[in-house]
Structures are given as structure tokens and as C-alpha cells.
Image (cartoon, rainbow, N blue to C red; front, side):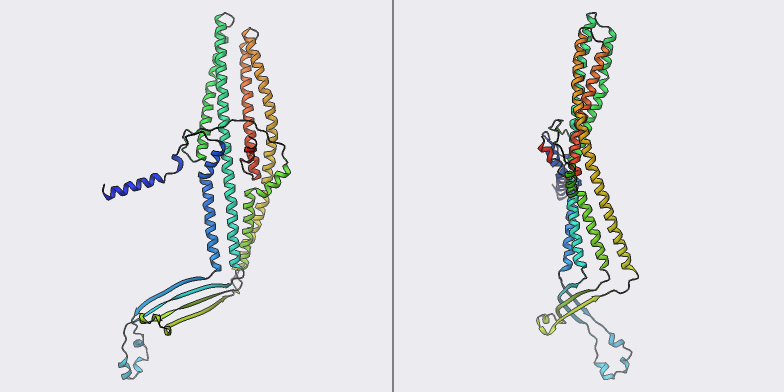
Length: 453
């Protein structure tokens, strides 16, 4: 293997190692907590939020450096020949013997030393800039929590969409099997001469009508798997499996006022909005400090020699200390414009915060109302399923003895299927609404979910 082939092999290994987790498949059924954990570890939304936090922390270090001395080593080496004296307009007036003594030759100059710069007084600009950067860190930390909660909720909903698709498909398959049994029963009755061909055809049509529903159910199940795969960052078509059931787990009575209070304190989006308001106010302070007095100090210590051997001779030592101050007194309205912009940003941040507080309150109330209505809908749907199944059993028994028609049996089958679908949809909606209420509150998506399993 020559060098080029070896380098190509190493490059191929690096590319394979750098492939994202999209190529990895999961060889065991995933529980809901495991799916959420994988999404929080892999999802780019969460990872990007973490990188933004790291970037802002770097900005904090950069801004804090302005409050401390800046030390640098400086130096240069110079060799030059300058005939400037020969070009002087008064050179010809010098005595001839003096002019003859002048001989322009090349010379060396070496300079090495240390410089120190330190801000002495900045009218609070450095301190305000540090506080502004630290507020940015707080905003990004809250942004990470918001991203984690949003991704967790998306995984929760995708997981329950999958459970709903599985349960609905199972209901369709059970209904299909039931209709096959009814079809066989109709054929036996026709063979005995107590049923007509019309009865058999009706059951055949009723059975065939389930095929499109089964196809749609399988498509919904496949789409739910695709969605969850994309959230946990595996290949979209990976044969992922999940471990869970669509169950109704009612919550105890909730205190809406208490939930609203927690949402006001915990909701990450509100924390972000408050941090943004704090940043806007700090930017206003920075704008107001632009035309104030600033003082800084600059010091230099080093050696300047023509002969490098003199670098350690104290006679060639050079040093300087400079204090600089700046006090603008006229800027043609530049500061006034900056202050006006910063003041507008403060007002905008205040209005955005108030609007977000109203939106959070609306989300909490809406999620709570959904829970209440869905709980009542589940109670009603459970009762309807029992009634529909009871009617179906009665119609099937009556049909065997000729006391019911095929239409009666078909209507009872349709009623059972519809009642079970309504119940499944209500349970799915209730569980998702619980997660949506926790999201609106700013609480961990799986917190109470685990408590009420």
C-alpha cells in the first residue's frame, strides 16, 4: 500500500467515524423515558442551544478581560541608512571641513520590552458590559431548558401518536376478524336456507370496506415511527420499536392558580424574556455612558540598543508611563441616537414580556380546560363502548336465531368500531394534554407522567 492509498484509507475511516447517529439502529423496544433521553442527547435543537451557551460564555470571558491589565511583549530590529542630513537645504552652508567629516553609514537599532495597558475609569462601561454578558448567559441557559422541554414534548406526542396508531390498527384488525366470523355465519345460514345471498353479499361488502381503513392505519403507524425516529436522530426508516400502552391515567384535581404561579416563575420562555429585558436596560446604560469621561494607563519598559551586546546594560534602559483621558463634548447627536434606540428596545422588551405572560396564562387555562373536557369525554366514551359491545352481542345472538337482520348486525359493528375509536382518541388527547399542561407550566414533561403510571 503506497502513501496515497494509506492516506485515503485513513480519510475513509475518519468519514465513517464522523457519520451522525442517523445510521445507528436501536435493537430493543424503547420506553418513553428512553426515547426522551435519546432525543435530548442527540437532537440538533438541544445541541445547538448548548453551543450558543458555550459561545456566550466565551463572550463573558472576553468582556471580563477588559477590566484587567493587558500585557504584551514588543520588539523590533531595524537596520537602515538615512542620508537625510545630506539633503538638508542648509547643508551647503556648513564649513567644507565639517562636510568632509560626515559619512552616512548604515546603522542598527534593536528594541525589546513589555507594554501594559489598564483601564482606570470607564464611567461603568466595563462593569455594565460584564453584567450584559452574564445576562446573556442566563438567557441562553433558559433557552436550553426551553429547547429541552419543547423536544421532550415533541417526543412525548410522537410516542403517543404511535401508541394511538397501534391501538387503532389493532381495533381495525379485531373488527376485521369479527366481520369474517359474521360472514362465515351468514354463509352457514344460507346453506341451511335461513339466510339469503343478499345477507352474504352485505357481510362481504362490509368486510371489504375495512381494507382501505387498514391501509390508512398502517400508513399512520409508519408515519408515527418515522416521526419518532427523526426526533431521536436515527435513520427515519429504521425498524424502531416502542414499549408502552395507551392507557387512561387521570390526574388528581388541579389548582389552576397554583399552576399559573409556577408557570410565571418556571416557564423558560418567560425567563428568557426577563433576561432580554435586563439586557435591553443594560444596553441603555451603555449608551448613556458613551460620552462620559474615560481614563486609561499605558506603560512601557524595555531596552533600545544599537549593539545587541548592550541589552543587559542598564544605561540603555527605556521606560514610559502615559495616562490618557477622553471626554467627548460634542458628537453631532450620535449619543442621543444611541440612547433613543436603546430606550426603544427596552420598551419593546417590556411589551414582549407582557404579551408572553398573557400567552402563557392562556396556554395554561386552555390545557387545563382540555383536560377537564377530555376526562368527561373519556367517561362518556367508556360507557358508549360498553353499550355498543352489549348491543353487538345481542344483535349477533338474535341474528343466529333469525331475530335480527344483517343490517342490524352491520350497524352494531359500525357502532362498536366508532365508539372504540372515539375512546382511543379521547385517551390520546387526554395524555397529550397532560404533557401540554406541563409544558405550559414549565415543568419537566415526564415528571408527573412517571408519578401517575
